[in-house]
Length: 294
Image (tube, rainbow, N blue to C red; front, side, top):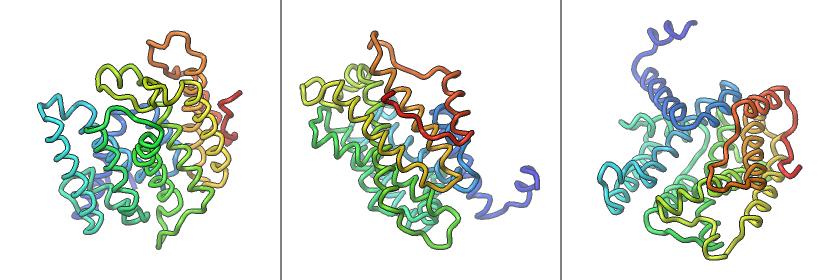
């Protein structure tokens, strides 16, 4: 059946669900080319679900990272908007519907794949931290990274294991550890890439570098360790997820390597499109994740 014919056939809730998924896909396509690349390597079973998770994450992130302030909202007003989004998300997961298309898409995924408030609430708690905390030590960094990144990895893992299943099941412990470690590595890489912007534009120090609580080298060593642990878990993922997770892992491994070797730290490190294509080709061929330490 062609896409046009499916659109003609879809009505009622089915049409609303598809429209919500399309809205989520648009959010991700506009905000992250690297993520969009990795997502295309997911099989059709998990792909739409992962997109809606990241769409909700992006909307929440934008509330605390600039657009809300640019629209004239104070920190307290942005906090109320974030609270409303969290409340709407939890309510939608419970009832299966939201008038907010991105929230509706997420709720349908959460209900199908077993994503509960034990993962949703820590995420919003970390987002809320951005409105009140600008300097982190080891303990607050770890708590922030758990809620802002590790639980997102755990949400995606719920999708990888449960999308299309009749009843959600609990992922294996090694997959849980791998998902958390990969999410933490992603977040720390982003912290290092955005170090100057976070400090100058947002007044934040997530890694404790300014206070001396951590060093750039110790953060990069932690990233490499997390990426290595995640790489060991990737072969145990369902087959229709491995390629996408491998290319995401390798993209961030490449970023970590470039961060370690960078001489001009005023320039934001990026991976050239040709290198991205090469990493995607490796993943498509089913090769193992790269070791970022070599």
